[in-house]
Length: 220
Image (tube, rainbow, N blue to C red; front, side, top):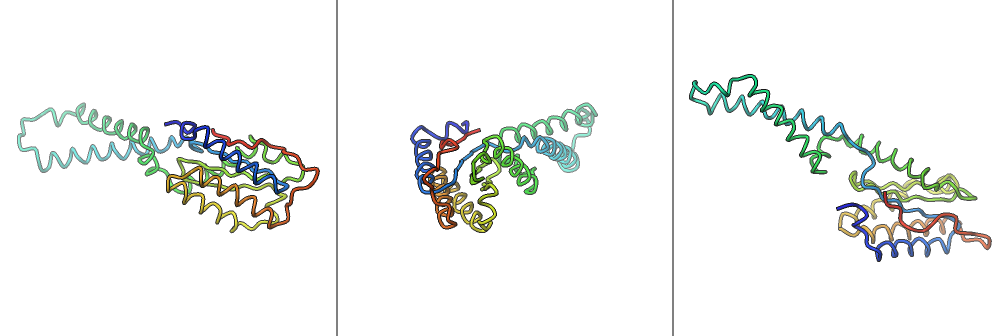
């Protein structure tokens, strides 16, 4: 199922309304962004291929050592046959990594996932022009599904007065709701909390405040 298909019109309206409601009280812009994945992770395919090819070769050794008793079975000792088994095992590994996100994650380090998510968030911050506000008071809630990662990225007008632990608490709650199968509830809660944090820090809506960035959910 494509990422866009996971959110119906009612879900999108709920999120848009949550952004509008939060921004009606603050001098800031909240931008929710969701992506399917932040990286291609081609390296996982190569690693899976090597591991499964090795397992195929090890299986052949075990089969030869403990199961084959008929020495006349010459096909098994044919180098071309051995090559075919090893290559076939490697291809199985590639297919499994391509078709299963769970298998693919097994061959990607946590550091690599975090690095790709951070790069993806920075790219989205620029692409969605979250920085393009008069007082540099934009906040982006970035959710990357494959990596199971959430990043809250605030522009300098906000980041200089809000401690990281407050964003961490927001992220922890959002991830918890996503794991419960309630992504829309999580996004709504995250948006509301962003609004509350800004109010606590004195970013109240002013008379000349305008809506500088659109309120809808960005799905990539």
